[in-house]
Structures are given as C-alpha cells and as structure tokens.
Length: 250
Image (cartoon, rainbow, N blue to C red; front, side, top):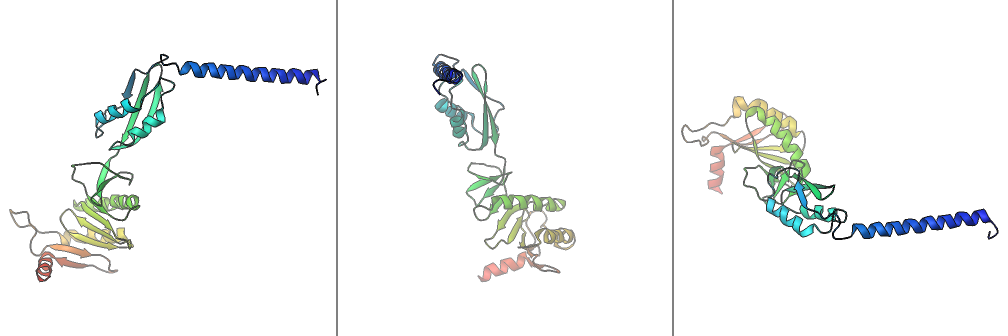
C-alpha cells in the first residue's frame, strides 16, 4: 500500500479536506457564539392575542431569550410559551438580522369539563379561567374528543327547535344524557343516539313544547321535565308536577 503513490495522494487529500472542514466549523461555531454578533433586538407577535395575557408572554420571553440571532434556543422558548393559559400551540421563526416572530394559536373554548377545566374545539381539555356562559361536559378522562364531537352533532339537530345543550353527560357505561337550555333532560342511551334525538325533534313542537307562566318565565306545572328516548317505538315522559311530588316524598 505504501508504494501506491496515487492511493497515498488520495488519503492525504482526504485528511487535508477533513482538517479544513473541522477548522472551518470551529471558526464558524466560535464566530456565531460571539456575544456582540447579531444580537436580538425584538420579539414580535404575528397577531395580537385575544385571551392570552400579553404581560405573561413578555415575561416568558424575557426569561427564555438568551444568546444572539443564531444561538437563541427557540425550542425552549416555544415550550415556555405553550405553558401559558389559553395557548394551544406556538410557532417561532427567525427574521434576519435581529428579530424573532412568534405566532400563538389560542384555545377556543366550547364547554366546561367536569367543572374543573375547559374543552376546546379540538376536543382537548385545558386549564384556564373563563367567565363565558358555556355548556357543561361530564365524562371520564380521555373521553373529551368523543363528547365534543357528539356535542356538535346534537347541537346541530337541536338548532331547528331553537334549543341549546346546557349539559352533556357520558356515563361510565357509555350512555348519553342531555340537559337542554329549557331545563328538560333527555335520556339517549348507548346506541342510535342521533336517531332518537331526531325523533324528539320531530315530536317536540306538537306535544312536548315547554309552556310558560305568563309574565314570570317559569315552567308550568304540566311542563315536561324528563324524556326517556330509549324505547324502540316511543318514549316516556315525566312532567314538572311529578318531579316536585317525588322530591317532596323523598
């Protein structure tokens, strides 16, 4: 091998090229880490936040932005911002020569979750405070996506009656129950929920519509309080007066 001049020249050329690249890498690494090279002068939000508190964003930026344009740890900043209430996700990009641009995706709350958290439009549970009037979801951990999906379906069906879902509950046995904005409770059971609710929507205007006491906005004694839709060819109802009687007896 040592008598092969061509091979020796190739090896020498390879070693020289490797040494040159290593030296170049070292020089670049040293240069970009110089404190005075391309310092960051600003961090810009791509859009004004609607629910995220701007002061919280500023505090996170001040705590996490270190180094210059090249060395700032974008991933660390992203993780810090995603811990803030109402922040669902964060994307950050460098804008040469001295700025970072931050885009925040905020949660859009659709309901409260078990009285302790909120659910967004993606069916994800998150912790934040809201004074908005929201429906209540009640279920086991891990069911939020399914409950949010069903909520959208039921809400669309009830829109024809100008009724809203005030509470949607999914039991451990996977049975569904609705409480409507007029106080009426619907038992949908574990199967054919949409078909059962469609039957309710068809019948409601003719025989189940809630009556009101004139001038008081309260439900009449004969108003329907509970509808059990789990029957194949019909449904069972319980009226307000019956509920009050049961309450007095108990």
